[in-house]
Image (cartoon, rainbow, N blue to C red; front, side):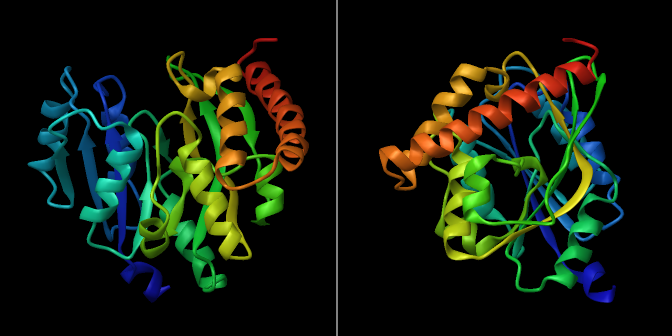
Length: 262
């Protein structure tokens, strides 16, 4: 328990025109029961009030840092920049429209104590829409997952991840046209045997009309490119793509049903 309290985490939050939800995201970090963290917010040339909102929190809490890109770099390069600027050995990601339950970091660090060999940790997810309504569906996750299992369905939500900084520097996110985070998790699992999960919805993932994951056709295309990017041949890619399609269509229906939509 003592080691958990002392372990410091750098939280990376890219933001672009995020005025609508970013305060909720920041508040969920401030409410964490684990207090040893820094929050690095990378403003990717927002044209709204994102900067003013963030600076208000920067002035109140020295653990919050604000960086502003001179030009629009996209989410991947913004995350990579945040990782490079971070001070700690462990990295967590939180998108500016998502939020955490207040014991998210604490429970992941307890899991690390149980699996000190682990380098990549994640959690289950709940889902909310643009109005803040919560779906009754919860994405459950296995206690641990392998490379081959992850190929069949990406159950690792970026905003749920806690990972060793060294690995993220070795495998930076590349491009915003595909599942840039999915590719990184796969590359890590090609080297490491398992990623470990807290099977609780400690992340609230916001579904919006603008989010890439809400566009099923685009998400399918990005998944195919992810398979090809990590070196799968056509036959292997097709095999796992069929698995992906079946599992994700079921998940999408369950999420919508959880919102009261069929």
